[in-house]
Length: 205
Image (cartoon, rainbow, N blue to C red; front, side, top):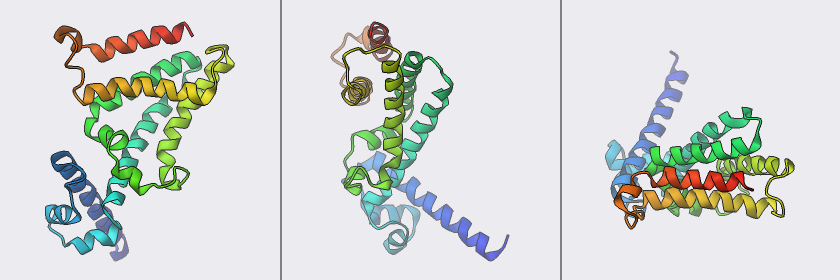
C-alpha cells in the first residue's frame, strides 16, 4: 500500500472513530451534555483534530443521522420489487417498525433529538437528501395506491404524512416507554397488534 492510500485509510479510520465515539457518548450522556472535548478525550486526540474533520458537534451528529437514514432507505428500497402498492405500503410500515426497534438509539437521533436538524437549516439542503429520499419513497408508494383506486378523496401530501405519523407514533411511544399504561400482557405485543389493526384499516381504504 502506498503512502497516499495509507493516508486515505487512516483518515477514514479516524472519521469512523470520531463517529463511533460520538454515538457512544450520545447514548451515555445525551446530545446536550456531549462536547467536542468529550469526544476527543474518548478517542485520545486533541479537540483540534476533531475540528479538522467536523466543524462542530451538530455536524458530527448529522453524519450519524445520515447513516441512519441511509440504512433505513436501503431497507425500504428492497420493497421496490413488490408490485402491489398496498402490499408494498404495509411492508414499508413493518420495515420502519423493525428498523426503529432494532436501532432505538439511532432512531431517537434521527427523529426525536434536535441537534441534527439544527445543522440542516433548510430541508432543501443537499445534507437532508437521505431523509427526503426515505419520505419520497413512501410518498411514491402512496401515490401508486391512489392511482389504483385506494384512499378516495384524500390528497397525497397530507395522506402520506398521516400514514408516516401513525407508524412513527407507535414506535416512538414504545421507545420512550410510554406504553406502560397499557395492560402488561397486551403491552408485550402492542406494536405488532397495533400495526395489524392499522393494516386492516388500510385494507378498507
